[in-house]
Image 1 (spheres, rainbow, N blue to C red):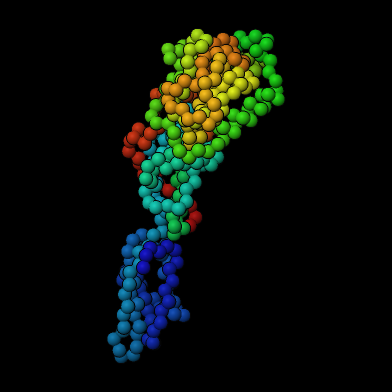
Image 2 (cartoon, one colour):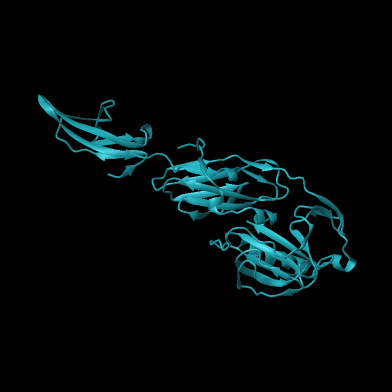
Amino acid sequence: MGVVSGDYLVDVMSDGERVTWQVDGGPTRDVMDGEIRIDTSTLDDGEHFVLVKAHKWMVTPAEQRFTITTDNSGPRVSIAERSLSVEQGHTLPVVFRVEDPMTHLRVVVADRERTAFEIAPGVWRALVGVPIRQEPGLLPVTIEVGDALGNQEVYQPEVQVIPVDWPTSGKLPLSKEKSEVDPPAVAQMREERDAVYAALHPEALWDGLFGIPVYKGVHTSAFGTFREYPDGTRSHHDAQDIARRKGVPIYAAANGTVALAKMQEVHGNAVLIAHGQKVVTLYSHLKDLEVEPGQHVLKGDIIGSMGSTGRSTGPHLHWGLVVDEVPVDPMQWVDESFELESFGELRPLTPVDTPR
C-alpha cells in the first residue's frame, strides 16, 4: 500500500446494515458515506492495523483487515560540530547530513539563500564567507528539507560568530601617481571580478589544503589589517600581502580554472582562479601573466611572476580568497581542510516548531 501522510481516504463498499472501522484496536467509528478518513497526523510514524467490520442482524460481522504505514515527519538532519562557530572574516563550512530521502532543500545564512553541494551520499556542504565586519554573536542559519510526501522540517542551528582582534597599521605609503585611479576603469574592474565571484560551478576542483603561492615570501600585511589610504579612507585589508623580489614565480594555490587574466585598474596584472562551488583565489600586482582564461591549472603551477603593477608600494603579491562572493582570510585554507573526513561525527538537530 506504500507510505501515507496527512488524511488518508479509503472507499468502502458493503451490504452490511452498519459498517465500522478502528485503527490499532482504538475507538470504533462508523463508516460515513462509504468512506473512511484516517487522520494520520494523530498516529505515530510506522505501521498501523485497520479493521473494518460489516454488521448484519443476527449474523457474525464480516471483517476486512489491512495495514498502513504512516510518515508525517520530514527528513532528519545532523550537523558537524565545526559548523557551529566561525571567526569574523573566515569561511563557515555548513556541513550536514540529511538522514532520509528528500526532494527539497533550502539553506539560508545571514538572510541570504546559499547553494549547498552534495559531497558524499546524503552529506551536503555550503561554504559561506563571513564578512570581516560581521557582528559577533549568533548568525542566523536555516536549513529546510522536504520529502516526496510533502513533509517538511525546518532546522535553525545556533552558529556563533567569534570576534577577531584585527591588527592595525598606519597610512599606506602610495605615491601620488599610484594613488590616482580612473573611476570608469575601477567600475569595469569590479564588474569583471563580481561576474567571476557570482559564477556557479558545481564541481569542487580543489583537493585538500591550499598552498601559499609564493615560495619563501615575507608576509607583510595580513588579511583584515585596518589601515588608512592616501585619500583618507580607512578599511580592512581584504587579502594577504606577500613580498619577495620582482620576477620570482607565483604559483596557483589549488587546482582550478583561470577565470580572468589581464591588466586591471588598481590590481595591475591580475589572475583569478575559480576552484568551483563559488571559491575563487585572486593574485594581483603581477609582473607577467603566464596563463589565460579557460586554462585549467593544478596546485603549484606557475601563473605569473612577482611584480608591482597597479596600485602597489613595491614588489608583492596581493593574494585574496573570495567564498560565496565575500572576501575571507586565505590563510585559513592553508591550515584547514574542508574535505568531509575533516569534520568528524555529525550530531542530530531538533526541528523548530512550524505549522503543519
